[in-house]
Amino acid sequence: MRPITSAALFASATVGGLAALSFADESYFRGIGRAPDNSLPANAFGYSRAYGISGDGNTVVGSYYTNTLNIGEAPFVLPLSAPYFSRLPGIVNDRSGEARAAAFSGNGVIVGRLRRSGADRAARWQKSGDVYTATTFNTSSGVTPTLARDVSANGNVIVGEGTANFGVPTAFFITGNAPRTLPAPTSEPSGVARWATGVSANGNEISGYTRGLSTGNQIAVRWLRVSTTSYNPTIVSVGNNIRSSDTLQGVSADSAFVVGSMQLPPFPAGFTTPVRSRRGEAAEAVGPVGSFGLPLARATSAAGAVVVGDWGFSGSAFVWKSDQGFRFLQDVATDVYGLNLAGWQLDSATGISDDGRTIVGRGTNPFGWEEGFVIFLGDLPVGCPADWDGDDDIDSDDIVAFFGDWEFGQGDFDGDDDTDSDDVIGFFTSWDTGC
Image (cartoon, rainbow, N blue to C red; front, side, top):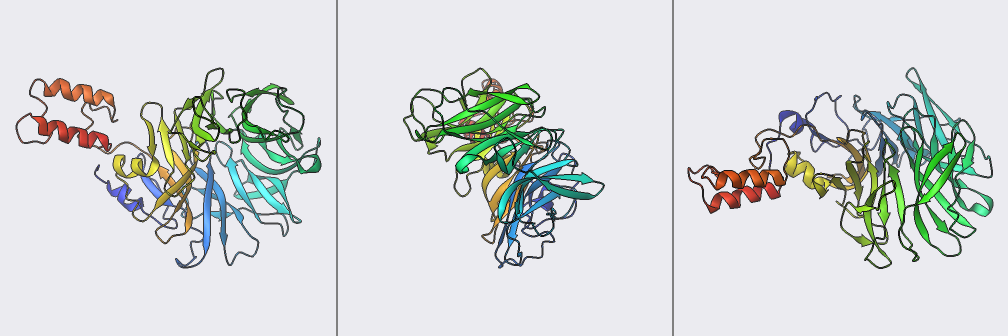
């Protein structure tokens, strides 16, 4: 295991917030708490969920619930410079809801939902000075928006899901104050439910999925903006067979990649794989195959190089990197970055900053309660013996470099003043665990 730096030790395995963080490039782990002032006793029921993070990595949004909160689940915002999260305001007495995403800086626009007069409505919070003000969106163009899932970097394009005639789920986008519906692919039969889940930084690309009401065929779809008021759909799913779990959950800030879960050949119906897909190219797996949409890639960094998600069970949050592949996030945090997550299980990774270094999600804290978390993967700690070529990452180049030295008697990994098979065993043990 890598050595734990003093800053990492201070911040790791924390339950319920801490003093403002300013560790520069030091890695840290942070439980965000389950109440705004962290006053909830360890044995009291309550939970928090971190859903998203602003592109600059400074603002986290989500929801929380306690048994003393008489309004149900409530939305929150957490500037990472602050010790605790704050509840976002409602409208008059309508304060129940959740926050799902923040614009790039996190200071302008946050989106999610509020429950108004007993019904969910997509919501937007806008900040003026230090105060957020909430608005909700009314029925327009045949869609009643119920949940805003994502927002463009400048806050001008909002996407999500609502209901149309007879309660059919319908994807929408907002470029002003009124929602418009996103069209279904023409290859699908009439009567198609659809969901919009993510939007690129410039608002030109939207991710989501559709489901045929009569066939049950669920396919991954991305929409490309063709004018200020319209988008055209493109099917990302492959093959003509009926599938039940294909979905896209996010799009990279640069519009190039979408991520989600799909049935990929040669696996039969019901088996799905977390995927990353570049426009115009076949989807690629970013994790092992699973079943019925449980392995799910949820978010990606700005250029698509880092993908996060989960497998739908305790401790299954994962991170995939284009140069390192798939690993469980908990293993990366502890084995590679030396963070102490004692008592924690990282269950789901739901958001990631544009630079791919700050990851948010939800886990199970040492007391057994669901709690949101933040992980910052900073500069790798120094002194990793498996980083044989000294480039601050652990990959196949280190194997090549080690054997190049070992062959000439310069591979004394274990420091016993000779080069032998023990050095090979020691090197690969360290390399396999990330140090």
